[in-house]
Image (cartoon, rainbow, N blue to C red):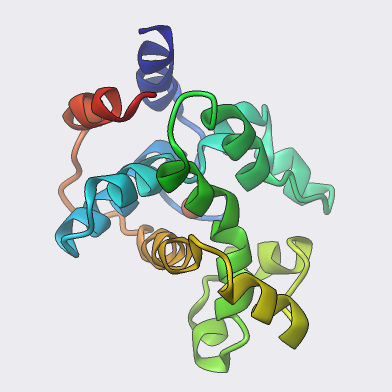
Length: 178
Ligand SMILES: [Fe+2]
């Protein structure tokens, strides 16, 4: 059960703010899982949301990466690590949630709604997808769920709502371990 304790303690020990926002990384991920629950998504998607930025826990200093104009590719780091413990339904949408942002940003309305920090990181992540890249992405098996993770991700930046704790998700995480 090492991994479960490690995930829980990472959530509890994380005090760094989500890049450019006013809540911690842990609060941001928990809030995106809460939104997925509220939208009556299945458990796998709730779990994807809960862990979607886990790569940031792996990168020691994400602020450093943004300041230095580098993208830490947190989605790939998180994916590579988590795929050892969770199945594809959960980790594939994590891997593609940044691609989903780049896909959704093709729409001007969506782009304009992005927070300033999110607009800035979009550039570092490669900017909006072109037609060819979009067509390739749409064909992926977990396209829809990746888009959903990204939508809850973008919305999970509120500071004035009643938050759940990572302890509330312990049994869900446990039930999803391979
Ligand atoms: Fe996020």
